[in-house]
Length: 173
Image 1 (cartoon, rainbow, N blue to C red):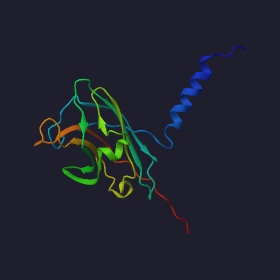
Image 2: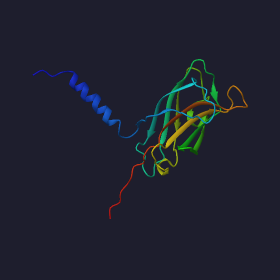
Image 3: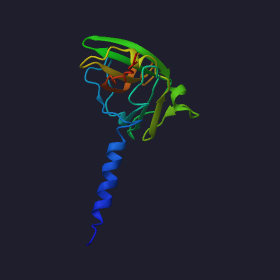
Image 4: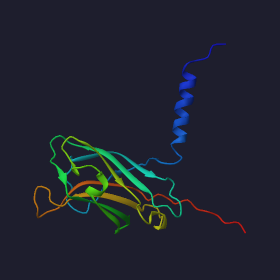
């Protein structure tokens, strides 16, 4: 009886698919549909959003990691602020803000043209306690406070994704 070499490969690939559902992993996201300020498209391209731990437990302050790259014709992004927002219907509220230097961990703390970047937003508070409603979103934006024109902050990145449903714990009597 001959064993196909494709069977072990298929088994490995399917196990990796199912294992990604546990713990940290990529999370579905999209570019913001209605950005709060003018969005300078083409500057950043987000390739991955991860939430860890996932699912978010009742006492967790998860880490959200955003990976991407900038276009070659962009300019240096520095002294930027990353905003984490909760959005439901027409109401948007701030969860937390991070300074670019706090999430890059590099020196200098900037994103160069044509460069890959990783933004690590540690200990995002309150995700587990936010109302989890259909169509509620978490929005993460990167605003360059100084950009091309010091008078006008420029939105360089904006992604949104479904509010991650928290895990529930049951207590038996």
